[in-house]
Amino acid sequence: MHQLERVTNLLALLLSTRRHLTFDEIRNELKGQYPENLVAARAAFERDKAILRDEGIPISSEVQGGDKAGITGYLIERDAYELGDLQLTGHEAAALRIAVSALRMGQSWGEEALWKVDMDSGFAPSQTPAVQAKLPVDQKLPTLHEAMSRQIVVSFAYNGKPRELEPFGLLARSGWWYLVGNDRSVDAMRTFRVDRISSDVMLRESETFVRPHDFDVRHSFPADLKELPDAIDVGGDVAKVLIDATDVNAVIGHYGVDSLIERHSDGSGTFAIPCANVQAFEHWLLGFLDRAEVLEPPQLRQHVIDWLNALAIGADS
Image (cartoon, rainbow, N blue to C red):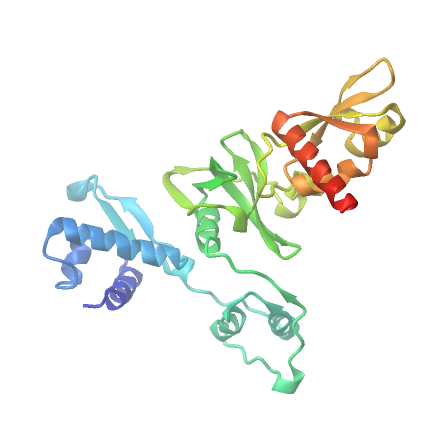
């Protein structure tokens, strides 16, 4: 049997069941579709589950009790899988049609979403609004949405470092998707650009979290672009920068007095400045010309030296 047919049958079975089914029960229901060898059958089943989850299908797993104690069962909850009645008013439906027509997400998801809510586009081809924005689609998004929905910790690699994150929210800004959450690696809120996650996103099924009740991804998104991470690793997210006395008050006005680490006898000051987004940090730094000096981290200091040398060479050529 072709794997696609078996996966489709597995999807139908897990949707139709009213209770969690164990692997043995699934194998019995789909008799003849999995290999006779138990190890090979289990491996095939794990691959099938991975395919469904990669497509964003929420498979619920639960450890059974009674005579099946310790055995994991599986089902797909219809409420999590199917789109319910949105109960849109006429004006809301019209606004949704316009939004779907004006925004492209790299695939035909918008049109398919209209089909699911049983809506006719209502536009003749000549009336369809022009596309105003295109938003990229990343294959990691379904897994991240599942993790947020089920409040499960995820792990991935970013800037060459392993991360364990409690994913609180996703936000699209300036044509990119950003993931916001509590980074357990540093026990602090962090923002990651989804397309720069350099590995698969893994669900840590046994590790859950509670999202703060007052969390709002719009307010948690950094207002300062220098706090947004990019693909350059400079040894840290915060830089120590020596600022000339003539600019100390301006920096305090922008970052607050808490950013001032030390005030020196000549009136200059050492500040803690976000540098996770190195390109934004470079643009900020360049505005001070020779009135600012990067002190730490050493990797960032060397990066700035190399960057300035490259600018000087470019200006001379």
